[in-house]
Image 1 (cartoon, one colour):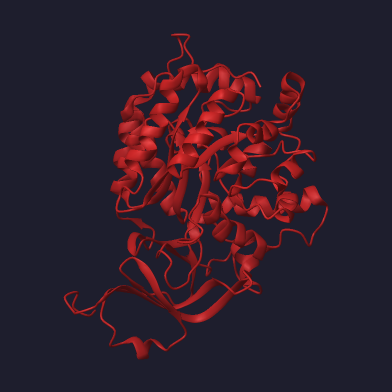
Image 2 (cartoon, helix red, strand yellow):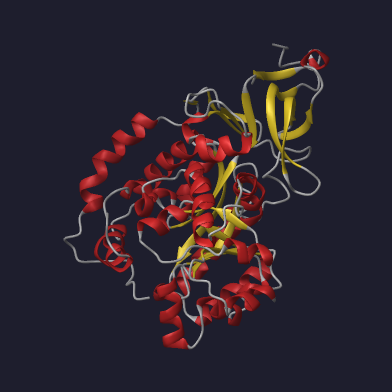
Length: 456
């Protein structure tokens, strides 16, 4: 290894990998025997120069990645990271009972410490699964920001609020977004996070749109989560949730819509005339688990030029923060829904998991692909296991055969957060031990409180 004191040393040089890249037409391609040079947290080059030609290039760290696939780090476009603490506590329930009888009563017990431990455990799970960036929509987000800073991940964070909190909820969300924007050496971006059109009224939604325009902030919101919500909204208001967003001016700002399985035909021309950068986050595992009748209309959204990123939602609703799983399920569910084996190919699924997901969280110019000038958010994947061999089609192997446990190394901004499956910034055993001690008080529902009423 070259001395780290050498002048102009690269942060990191990865050699011998097969690199997943995007070509000039945004198609997925693979470059064999590639070398990736990282300097000042950015990708300096992705080249096929022989490693010997780079032998004299000083580097603080080198990784021999022969036999591994180098990919852009995955992006979890919609989650509630601290809710891993509630994994499995509300199983096999319809959504209304899930919220009203279990989740929202438990969440009334949340302390900052619960949020911290849940966020730490979630980040450990995501790093081990090759997720380098996540978009989080939850409470006590200063606590989550501190965890992101400490563990080295990248995140877009939004402090959730309901209209039942009064103006204070919206003001707290704005205050958080402005204070934490650019924190963690620039790894934290922020959003305004109204919960949903059924818990945030028209006046608050319009005020949120105005604040987003004034401050250049993304808005991250649940909307048209399922078809029942759309039908209820039409019955009560004569408008779909998407039409409510348009009326509030939210389609004219940068907007991330969580789920969108209730987007219907009449919503498509509404979305087509949006002037903001609108994206949708799809988390198919949860839709299957809740037995929702429809899924995110990825094909129709693609025809409108709306990026669809992949998410997991919270682990309380689907048991997992595995974006690898979301990628495979997206491909399978879309084929099933469209009755078309040629739709949502493996290469398309990889595009959704990488560049489209980066765009969905407002980072499409800085992450999502392995290219010079992009942030060095890189994962190395080992396809040598019996469940992936033989490899006839790399894209298919990655989407339909590989598992999150095949990720060997996770890198954010040139910093290695996991090397050969060893987490370097988080102590899982310690986190789990502390979290277990807090479970009795966290899970107590005898008080009869809940943070909100689900009626959508």
